[in-house]
Length: 246
Ligand SMILES: [Zn+2]
Image 1 (tube, rainbow, N blue to C red):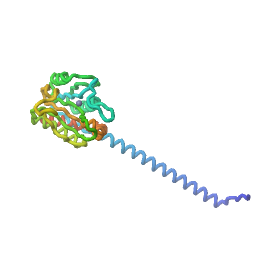
Image 2: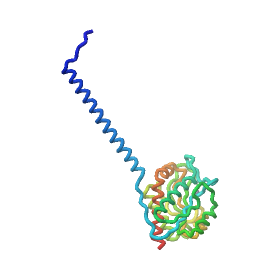
Image 3: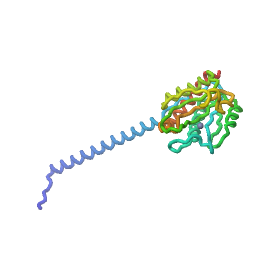
Image 4: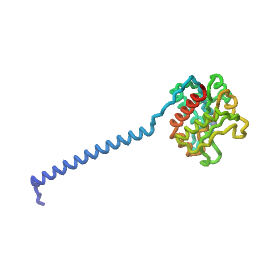
């Protein structure tokens, strides 16, 4: 077979073509790199919202109680998680935030230890806390049928108790909850009786039920919004302290 030799003109066209392909590839790579960096930054900013911390206008003490602990695991989640762990995760974040707001925080537990109910109220009373907040998560027998957050307060239903309960629920709603189940007085059984930690504490006290562990929606919301929920709770507490303790 006879080989055809390239003319000078054909050679020049080929070189031009190759240069064009190279330049196009380089531009494409640069554009891709810029898009990738932008996407990464966007993702980062979305996950790390800038939280603000309301500053306390006085010397306040708040007792945070992470419900259950140790052998007492509390409710069990559909995903096998334990209420005691969720309560502690949230409690530690609320503690950190309150400290940033200039509030003194007393914890009934800071690790996976078991603490008697009577010890929890004793710790709160001994500390002279202005407020006692017990963190829990709910559960029911039916799966994925009931969801939402609620707050339990003393059966006397004082204005101060309602004020802090509503402040927390409204701030949680701003973050996003499956349902606001509202403020409840007394216990599930009776509006005249009280849960031990509320009954035995001498200051304004409440139990915050952070969604149902038997609801996948609530489990997902809790994990996705943990930091935002902690920020909502701590700012609600500081707002209430600033308005009610002076
Ligand atoms: Zn509980």
